View 1 (cartoon, one colour):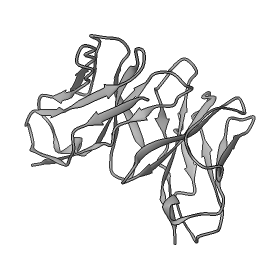
View 2: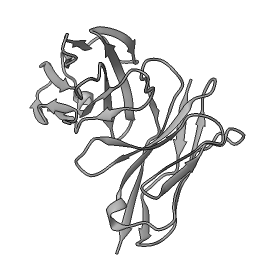
View 3: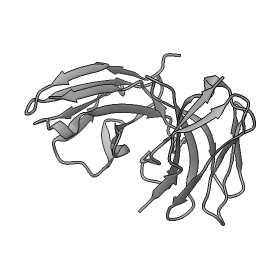
View 4: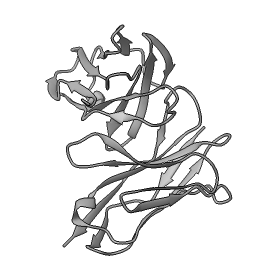
Amino acid sequence: KAGVTQTPRYLIKTRGQQVTLSCSPISGHRSVSWYQQTPGQGLQFLFEYFSETQRNKGNFPGRFSGRQFSNSRSEMNVSTLELGDSALYLCASSLEGGPGELFFGEGSRLTVL
Amino acid sequence: GDSVTQMEGPVTLSEEAFLTINCTYTATGYPSLFWYVQYPGEGLQLLLKATKADDKGSNKGFEATYRKETTSFHLEKGSVQVSDSAVYFCALYSGGYQKVTFGTGTKLQVIP
């Protein structure tokens, strides 16, 4: 059974640009959540999607957005990039009924110059 | 709000040593508690979980007991191996559509 797949794995952007990250969940998982991991702040919850609906959102500015498609694949977008957005962005999928049991991808490492 | 506090690392142990990584939490209600592990270059993996007070989660020789009276969920292993070298995250879930609150992580290095 394939795991959670995130693309791209690494990317470099400059301030002011925007970026789109993609996540394909484990087959059958309909919940997809996103986390930002940085050395200073650790893991912080961005948002969660289920059946194309955002059900929860963390404390991030509106520059951070996401969506989920009918096949459960998800994308997140960060506009007007800032240096502080440099981080590892982790996607996790889960089964409904398994609260807190997250299956993570390897992450997309974003560097903003 | 919810929070998780875990011991600062890095923790360096010799192979076959006993491991304890302390974790305490603050949460409303009765959260589920987890330990996740992150190996170098990889995403996080669920190591073990406990969903109610006095539950003991266990996996791969690791154990943790949900202590409501001390709001703790300490991770233990009797004999660590070099392959256990990783970053360990204590986490809790108290509701809110997979919004999991993580500790800052504890890096474990096991030397032969």
